[in-house]
Length: 318
Image (tube, rainbow, N blue to C red; front, side, top):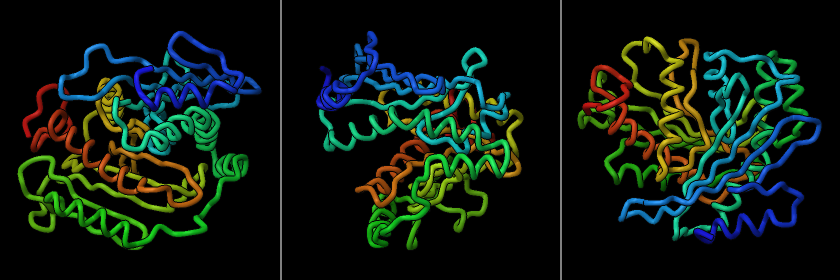
């Protein structure tokens, strides 16, 4: 065992009739809906300063029967609604992937374990419904009813908790504010101007966290988003989304990869979204998702943003 979280995963899955594979587990869903795989891969040579010991991939392989066919742009529009990982095509087959980094020391191993197990069990059934729902409004209603997930929270997240997270962001020099259900912040992708209220031309990404948001299929939950400050629409926004999703999965030591870069809005602009279904407030999930957006935006600034140009791949000049 590499760490306590891995030990907890094996213990939780041991009683279930799953196929054991060389690196994890395989779950064949009823009715030929598809196959879910959980793979645990030890890290051979982590950085000396890191406590990273392994990565966990959760992959859903969807059977095509009953699903529309998707081209490249359709996949990235679907990713704007993704739950529990990014969609992509593998040899023409719809697949979805989430990824987690495991560390030798985890302050909340029970929560990390539960999140991984939730994704393993729910990624394929919910992800299949999201893919089927895009056909029409009636299909969306049908898929929503199929899962019957709560459409609202029976209790609200205390506004004070959202305010505290916004205050912590401001203490780090990030322009941020909150209201009864949301946090929003600006992250400078170039220069040192923290907000467009100071300079309308500042290249700042808009980071948002909504608590109790309603997903078209997956019920109520948390929604975290990142919108990038494109001066003009990228020449190939589909490729931007695909390459950013692929680049995230190449990062072994990173925040959980449960969301996706996809095409958003009427102009099909690349943006990030991560939706976590749940029937009520879930610990400090709001704070974890917001700080995850900050880390993701910092990665974009350092690796994939050039001032005045937008997203680049290779060496970016901040």
